[in-house]
Image (cartoon, rainbow, N blue to C red):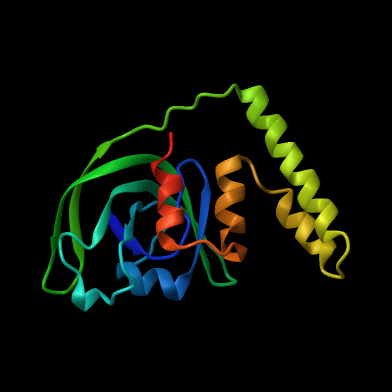
Amino acid sequence: MIVVPVYNKMILPYSRIYFRTDEFKSLSGRVAIGEKVVMLVKKEDIPKEEYKEDSFYPLAVTGNISSISAEGYVEVMAGERGYIDDVSINQDYSIELSIRRNPVTIDISEELRSKKLEQIRKEMNEYVSNYSWGQSAKAFISQFNSLEETVCAMSIWMTISNEEQYSLLEID
């Protein structure tokens, strides 16, 4: 299992999360298709040499590396949310942990989720159509399969703090 500590990066269950390959390797030490991943959120933007057991928030997201692109990106297909029970920092600054399931409660119908996703896609497509790069953006937008995935993909353009991003992970 690969443990990937992140800061100021949106991680939500059941979404595709992208990392630059070099970034992923520096955060985790290795990358391989099919590897199980646990993404946890750092409380502060500190280097790995300063990690302590309490440097991380208590919720994490599990997943699997689904692809490594020739363009230099790692795609993690996120699975469930989980509570981190124990964290150990090794001498090489790698992280070991135990995690227990904490599934998200989905309290709106699939029909309503689909309707909201289509509404968001429509609004985003209308917005980007005013720009020369709009057609490329529309292709990107059409690939979103869930509300969570949309939020993760668009988070790089949002001006919200690490704490605010983590708070979305806490919400059922």
